[in-house]
Image 1 (spheres, rainbow over the protein chains, first blue to last red):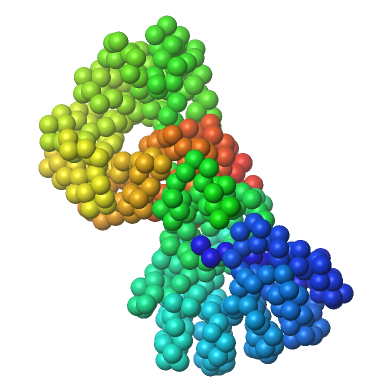
Image 2: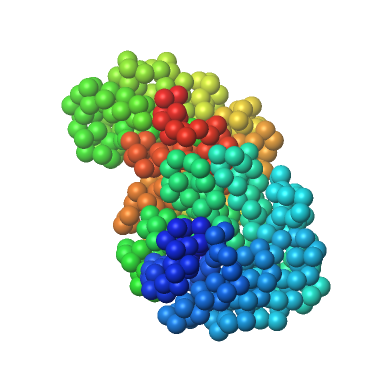
Amino acid sequence: MFIIGELINGMYLSIAKAIKEKNKEVIQKCALDQIACGADALDLNCGPASKNPTADIQWLVEVIQEVTDKTLVLDSSKPQVIDAGLRVMKNKVMINSTTADPQKLAIMIPLANQHNAKLIGLAIDAKGIPQNKDQRLELAATIVSACSESGFPIEELYLDPIVLPVNLGQAQMKDILEAIRDFKIISEPQPKTVIGLSNVSQGSSFRSLINRMFLVMAVGYGLDAAILDPTDKELMDSLITAELILNKQIYCDSYLDAYRKK
Amino acid sequence: MFIIGELINGMYLSIAKAIKEKNKEVIQKCALDQIACGADALDLNCGPASKNPTADIQWLVEVIQEVTDKTLVLDSSKPQVIDAGLRVMKNKVMINSTTADPQKLAIMIPLANQHNAKLIGLAIDAKGIPQNKDQRLELAATIVSACSESGFPIEELYLDPIVLPVNLGQAQMKDILEAIRDFKIISEPQPKTVIGLSNVSQGSSFRSLINRMFLVMAVGYGLDAAILDPTDKELMDSLITAELILNKQIYCDSYLDAYRKK
């Protein structure tokens, strides 16, 4: 599982404050904490309060590159913010995200190609959130097809089925899980899959429990990557155990420790 | 999920002692505790130490019927023990189990038919434990076919893929999960599926965590029933949440309590 730490996001007040005050210690500590807990990559999102997101994303990239060479994930719906982040990027990079809209694809795929970036493709377009598995597959196929036409390597494409909060989208949860499985049959080579996990428990009680259970089921359906809170120890224990069951790491009695020492 | 409590089993010393001393309070308390925690049925196994398993299973059935009318699951590889239990059975009943061996099927299916019993069919035969998904499907198909020929209702058949301990059978875990899914395509009407959960963590550290994660993935693959310890609260919380995600109960903020009050 490719684990993308979600915590450097301006929707969290402490991060918004650190971005505003250019307090790099807070950001660097948040980066290193997530990496220590198992993050393979770090999502960077300036948040809704940022008045100058192109400058803020560049500052985030620069201060985090001082302390890690892990993959950085530029998270914005605005192409100019992604572009700004890419200009100062030295680490490996992932673009989060394009939608299935032709005008978005026409901007984001060339950017990803130009910077050898991985790309997250959301199964959504201007018509809004898909209502079932077939709509998800159709949107995903649109993205795959646009990537193929532009010579973007499909193994570097991470399709996101759009996870809904279980308290609103309960009837669609099984479709979302099956979309994770079925995205793989859209093309050969296969695209990868990713979810933004925490959304599943938005507004619910027992958030951590719901996150854990959805993640484990998604792993069972073949999920490749997740944006999540790697400092949630129970979540990481669940993920490590799910991957153990699927034979993705060799069993030993102290497999939780062994994973963390890797 | 049809939850079968596993605790009335003579392999546990306290149960073996209660059976030997005919201490019905211990057995009745164990039955009621499991039901209070959510068991829909109770597995009854006299254990390896029983010198007179036909008499012992009858005693178990009789003392448990005094306190509950839940389904009782007669758990023995010996047809004469199953037969003895059936003779004193007033509750609904499930036979645990037949294998795919012709001589076992020839005894167990008529017994199940005669007593309107549900039947657990193990994907195993005299050749031993199956080595992959295809062998599991072949064994399951043999059982389904024998049931069909004898007029046993396939909806009452619970196919068990044989869960191996993860520390020994790690390479087969995914096959076992996929067998749970694919058993459904053997016939129409579909057979049901069941697992003996605790075996997955036999000999491992972190038993409860491994049980939870395997169960949740199995639920994601469509599992219908499980033999497990319903007094493991974290296990039950996980199961309830997994079923919530799959839309098998309506979301409410207190969904864990709501499930338990049902």
